Length: 198
Image (cartoon, rainbow, N blue to C red; front, top):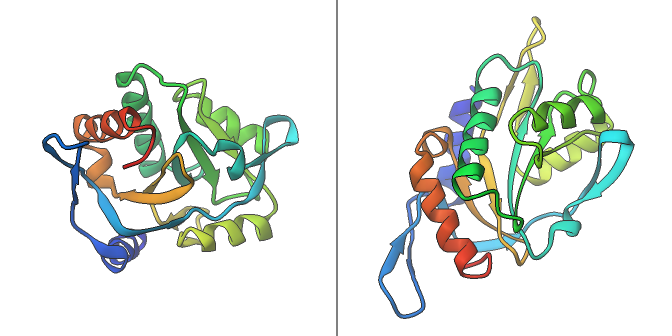
């Protein structure tokens, strides 16, 4: 169900890759779902390890890859975070690229647990949590669906959102996109070379 909703969301937001001119040079084909009409990434304040407040606005000037998941997830979440780690390291761990994971399971994932989980995939990754109400509000702002079943598993939107250095949502990556590590690396190489936007 979550995957179907993710796919539907991507279609609604304007699917298809976009050809982007590179300062008068060759045109670059970006993967994922590139928004033809980028929109500002909603700000939020959640908490990372040590209950330290962490706001999206702190990252202005950097490219952000944002993923909603949870630490008890048996498959999609660890695989997505693993891929993000591969992508980050393939780029040489750039300081102007940040990876955030926001839990969709705040009842079990406190800030320390979520941040510790994110750092399993790279020590620079940041895990965020908060109250159930705060998480629900942030998830809604980013069009993320989640629903817990009777076994405690959570069906949720599994896209990765790319926010550029100007604080604009530019690309949504589905699972099929994230699995194409080399293509995402090329996207990010191009974006970072252009000051974090395009």
